[in-house]
Image (cartoon, rainbow, N blue to C red):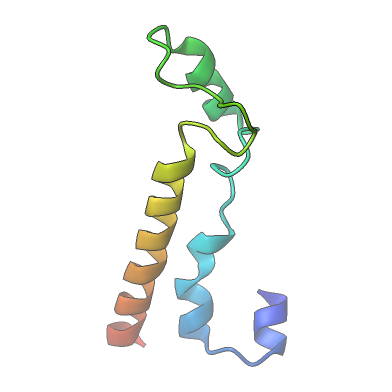
Length: 79
């Protein structure tokens, strides 16, 4: 945010882009992700062969992209 402000980005752009800084799903290091992987007995929730290949990657990317897009739409009407 300080960099965006210093670059003179509009406040609506900064607010709409805020969900993009959420990286909890990107690396499987957050407590709830590790717990979900450990509690799953069916084996569908897992960390893949690579660190950036796990069950929460695609849902996290979809949710972040959707949140940013909705943020820009709301900012267009509100601000």
